[in-house]
Amino acid sequence: MSEDIYAKLKNSIVEMDPDLAEEAANEAIEAGLDPLECISLGLSKGMAVMGDLFDVGEAFVPDLMMASEAFETAVNILTSSMSAEEKNNASSGKVIIHTVQGDIHDIGKNIVSTMFSANNFEVFDLGRDVPVSLVIEKAEEYGVDLICGSALMTTTMASMKEIINSLKEDGIRDKYIVMFGGAPVSAKWCNEIGADGYTDTASEVAAMAKDLIAKKRGA
Image (cartoon, rainbow, N blue to C red):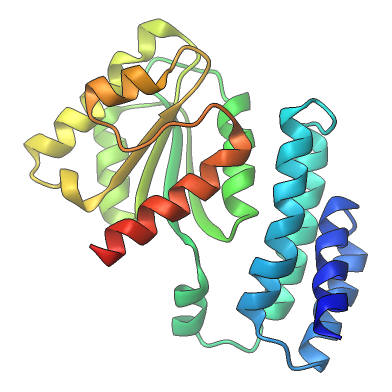
């Protein structure tokens, strides 16, 4: 019974069908299934499929948006009876995402933001061309786990290094996991400036973030 519902939840994401997601989530509630298991064993697996399809060019940004809508529909139902504390514990984490100072390109950022949302992260999207000082200010204000920035121009990548340096100067570098991405960004660059993570594809971002957060909390 539970496996059938998990499969239905997964399929609702792959089929980008909010109505099916609602139906499957209500069935899960009626069956008394654990909401967190429904998310991890059903919904998240569906988003993983969508991420893989996106990476190979068989799904596109509108598809991810529709899948994300189905995901959020089901999550809202599954967590409706949970307390605020339980919902907070169920969250994968809090993330600030932005396009770095001087850069106005946001397609990649928006894709990654969707992937975070669809993996049960609480996302604070600061938009494009965001000053370094505002990134730090909002990270402190929102109490996020992760700072994530993107760039499409090599000339704006220096802002990523400035974020790391500002966190160090303020004595709060260890509070945050910092990840960067974008067409000109590489793992080598992220290592050089002292960032915590980098992935080649949008579908891998949420999984890496979850892993880094788990390691930090277990430290």
